[in-house]
Each structure stands twice: as structure tokens, then as C-alpha cells.
Amino acid sequence: MRFPVTRLRRLRRNENLRRMVRETFLTVEDLIYPMFVVPGSKIKEEVSSMPGVYRFSVDELVKEVMEVSSLSIPAIILFGIPESKDEAASGAYSEEGIIQKAVKAIKKEVPEIIVITDVCLCEYTSHGHCGVIKDGEVDNDITLELLAQTALSHAEAGADIVAPSDMMDGRVAAIRSALDESGFKNTPILSYAAKYASTFYGPFREAAESAPQFGDRRSYQMDPPNALEALREVALDIEEGADIVMVKPALSYLDIIRMVKDEFGYPTAAYNVSGEYSMVKAAAQKGWLDERKLVMEILTSIKRAGADLILTYHAKDVARWLKEN
Ligand code: PBG
Image 1 (cartoon, rainbow, N blue to C red):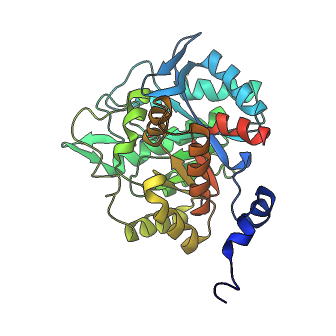
Image 2: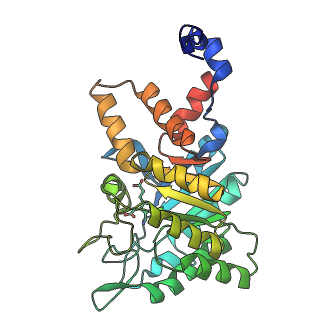
Image 3: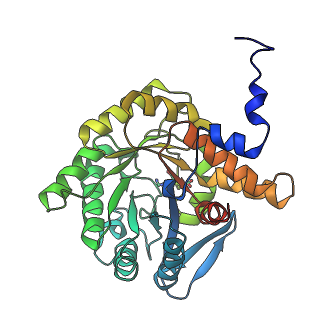
């Protein structure tokens, strides 16, 4: 039926009508809050390129997690900055490592919150790459053993979900069998399945001190122009045992989120990454855009694209705004 019988504006005339036909709702259940933990005590330092995001020592982190939990955010994802780095990334899988300590402390004080740990080596290697270097290249298969060891040590410390973000081939299977062999058959894997070699990670690398010291990550993270390859990445991770699959970054990859959701119908996460956050903050600080409306529009669009879960540095603000509404 066409105009003038059909008038699509009829259902847009006021807020209650709009609410009644709204197709997508962002809820606090969708949110996962990323957090950075550093050695030491009484530390809460702001990341200069990410206003409102801090690096916490374990004691301060626990307090912050209490606040996150009181906002009804169901989950956090942890990134660790170790005391020292080496070629073998030993800080990643040490029982006394920064993540292992943080997880234990959080699970003791705030047991209900879902603690997800990022499983990667880049914060722990002296060269900043996500794997072990052999003959000038990131060696896939040697790296798998260390990733499996890292994931297992996180589970032993009490992590509820492990999230490999390295993009090595075969890591989900390696982690799944390491967990299963040690009695962690119920620990889910959230895999960064389609992770692109993106410029949007810039501010994160400042926060996590994880910029590669030579070269870049393009030999393991995906080439941004590729979409069909993302489906192959996700298919493999699901075959290897991933429970939740992630697309990263989110905003420039909404098409990938939609394809992954339609193709697999799996629980799908999207990472609204550091650079996406910093751009919003910068524009808001300049008074160029309304931060609250902008964030809600962005996160709702990620959900509309098919994401069930959104990792976002805006999570605390959003949780507060949702409560106010
Ligand atoms: C570790 C990792 C990165 C991010 C999450 N896990 C950085 C990278 O791959 O260089 C980026 C998150 C963000 O930008 O917010 N490999």
C-alpha cells in the first residue's frame, strides 16, 4: 500500500508510539566491561588517550569491580600488565602472574561477577607480539602451547570464561583440550574469532603497553577488506569448541557482525574497541557531539547488527543511563 494510505510517520508521532514499535533494546545484560590491572597497590591511573578509563592495582581493582557489579553489569574482561616482560611471555601463565592474582582477589570479594580473562601473549612478551618469535616470525604452533597454559592458569585462578585474542590458528582446540584434561570442562571459551588488524586498537596499546616493538600484527590478525574469510575463521573456532564468538572491532565491522549472526546463530559478541571509545570522548570533550546520545546510538547499532554481547569502555555510564530511563 502506498502513500497517502500508508504513512510511516504515523507511528513516529510521540515517544510512547515509538517505544511500542521499537525493534532493538540495549540492556545492561548486554554489557561486558574491560578493565586493566597493573602491579603494585593503591594505583588508579587514567589512560591519557582514554578519558574515564583507568589502570588499577589489584586492591583498587576489587573496589572498582564492586561498583561495576552494583550497577548490575554481569561481566568484566581483564587485561594484565606484568611486572616484567620476556621472550617467553612467562608472566602470562605464572601462577603468581598479575591476572591470576587479580582473578583470585575478585572472585573472593565479588564472587557473582563473571570474570572473563583475555588470553594473549602481547602484554607479556618483550617484543609485544601475540606469540613466540622464531626466525623473525610469530610461530603459530609453539605459541599454542603457551596460550593453552595461560588459559589453564586463568581457569585455575577462578576465571569464569577465557577469551583468546591472539588469532593463532588452532588455539581454541588447544585451549579446549587443555581445560578438559584438567577438569575445567565447564569453562566456556569466548573466542575473538574475527579479529581484524585495526588502527582502532591504538589507545589500548598505550593502556596495556602492548604495542609490537617491530613490524605489525598483519600476519596473524585479519585483513580489514575481507568478509568471507571472517566466516571461515568463525566456522573453525566453532568447530574447535568456541562457545561465544566475537567480532572485533565493532563499528567499522557491523556487516561482519550481521553475517556471523545470520550464518551461525551463535552467541555473538562485538568489541567496541579503544579507538572507537576515544573518538567519542574526544568529540564530546570538544562539545561537537552529545556523548550520551552518541554512545546509546552506537551501542544500539551494534546490537541491531546482531551482537548479543558488547564489550565496551562505556559500560558503566550506559548502566547508569539505563537505570535513569
Ligand atoms: C590483545 C588485545 C588487543 C585488544 C584486545 N586484546 C590489542 C591488539 O590486538 O593489539 C584491543 C582492545 C581495544 O582496542 O580496546 N591482543
